[in-house]
Amino acid sequence: MKKIIILALITCLTNVWAQTPAEEVQAKLNAIRSMSASFDQIVTAGKREVSQSSGKMALVRPGRFRWETQSPLEQLVIADSKRLWVYDTDLEQVTVKKQEAGLGGTPGLFLSGYDDSVTRDFDVTTKDKKGVRTYILKAKSPKENFQTVQLTFKGDALSVIEFFDQLGQHTIVKLKDVETNPSLATKLFQFKPPKGVDVVEQ
Image (cartoon, helix red, strand yellow):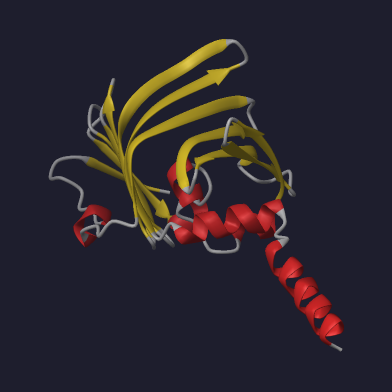
């Protein structure tokens, strides 16, 4: 009788521990309720480098996000859970759209998405190298903005994000000075267009 009970317990524990790769990466993302970091981003198309930029980012899941490009050109992207604001400083122009219309269209919006988005929208595999695990997400739908996403974690800390989009562009975002679950001010995710700039609604 004791053997049966022990065997049943082992079976139950095995089922709990045996997460699929999709469940595993979703759990890691769900554990990140807020995050701040500096970033370096490179976008390529084939062998050609399209752009290179750096700046700071912050997010509160779900739905709030700030992506502040500081070099070479200043741009501020803010998602306030209802609207997506893009402020191009040099153009003196703000573009605003409903957030769901832009959801998934930028690295920040992908990361600040909802708690079941990975398991719902992607098939996931993994690769491991020297204690670093990378999750490879393949979109189930050809309509997804990002057809392939790669998330690399060092322990529970997200360190590299890679996106392959429908246009064949490859975006690599390397994070540094990462803080997981910090307390972030609400004003970071609020935006009011400066006086004198053009506001374009989409």
